[in-house]
Amino acid sequence: MSLNWKEINLVLSELDLPGMQIQKALQSAYDVMALRLYGRGKTRLLLVSLSPGACRLHETFRAFPKTDKPLRFAEFLNSRIVNGYIEEAVQLGDNRIVRLLIRHGENHYRLYIRLWSNAANVIVTGPDGAVLDAMKRLPKRGEVSGGRYTPEEEFGSGPEYPAGTDAAGADSGVPPGKILVYNIREFDAPGTFNEKLDAWYAEHGGGLSLEKLREQVRKKFEGSISRLGASLEKLRAKEADYAAADRFKEYGDIILANMGTIRDGDAWLEANNFYHEGLIRIKLDPRKKPSAMAEYYYEEYRKAKNGLADVRAELAEGGGALKRLEEEYARLLAETNPLRLNRLMQGKGQKAGTPPQALNADRKRPGLSFRTGGRPGGDWLIIVGRDAAENDALLRRHVKGNDLWLHARDFPGSYVFIKQKPGKSVPLDILLDAGNLALFYSKGRGNGEGDLFYTQVKYLRRAKNGPKGLVIPTQEKNIHVKMEEARLKELEHCRIEK
Image (tube, rainbow, N blue to C red; front, side, top):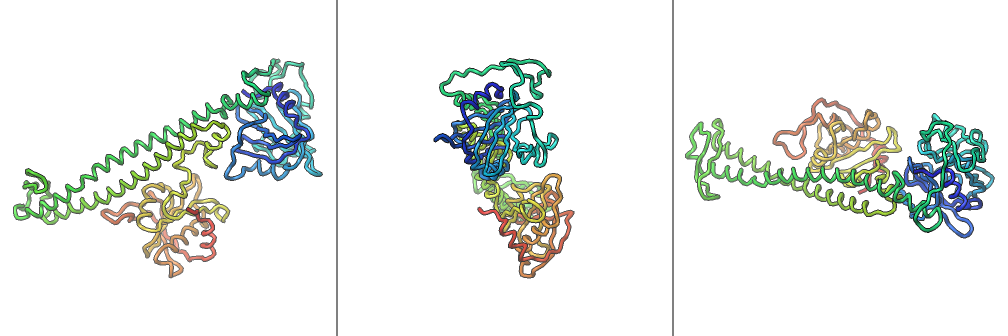
């Protein structure tokens, strides 16, 4: 439940904001911010939440989470109003719009906090109502830089309705003109009204309550844990199958030991099993000579052994990921500060609730990774496998069908991948970036230029019985690239450190 107008007035009366200095603006999510204030010998943290169903402002007594990267609106506020003084803090009528008048040197600003459940926002204007910025940029409402916001013209600056009543707001779902009676809620807790609100919303505050946030954690993590566990079970079954690879070597040895007894056209060999007691029947290809049949089983043995090593490596990696996932799940469920939990669920700048196996993926991925943000072509991820093992690992677990693959045409070397962005074509400049990397990390580096293949990963097929990582491209295109020293130096600055 959001605050009603009476509760907002009580919050403001307890805080006594006029005369307080703004020390810092903080923002932990796109709809949660706080102002650190100092005045009358005390520091306060004024929380503003625009979360639907829990729109509110009040003093919070909980630690406000830090962000890895400052968010846009907090940066704007810190550039304009930090070290400014609040001259006035009032609610406009009974309309759940709080106006802070702020003086910063010679400049004056108006900071409006609109606490409407379906249209909440924080808007900063100049004295003339010109919008400087908004926490939620809403062009249709004119709540963007260059727009105009003057709610006093619509709502005035004083109460418009009889004491104890309020008009139904446009966002309330109640028919216009209906008179509602609002009361200040009673909470069975000690302290000021601000302290009671802070405690109550921590447990029941809609999307920012511990109950709701923990439910989000469960939904996100339990599904991920279940899927990862199922994948590990399949790998264990494959491991058991590959672990029996020694039988292929035994078949080859027994065939070679009994070559004199095998006749042309035989489909089976029945012989003494000198590895185990008793007789054994081994399937033969009537078209192949005994020596070729033995070599066939030896080759199956080698393939199974290589596959076993790969499967065990995947099991180790998956087991580690599952352990980290379960530890992160337990850590989030144990968090008691809803603001910090909400920040953690933002995934440090990724989509809310991103499970930890996706966090720090750049650093855990084999090979080299480059992010091109800030360069021509925009922000793209380019991955370089430096040897056959890294090429194979990237193909198996880190790229998808629509990602772009590049490789030097006439020289052995790295596989380079450009991660696809939905609905976007790879710009030429990014293609040249990847081409320079493919040539630089190949045996053709000394030539200074060369031809490259490129195609989508889905058009690669593994070479039958080929070495690890070897693929054959189809539907490939060609590009001729000259190495550019300046481009490579710029890319080095884009390299993700591990």
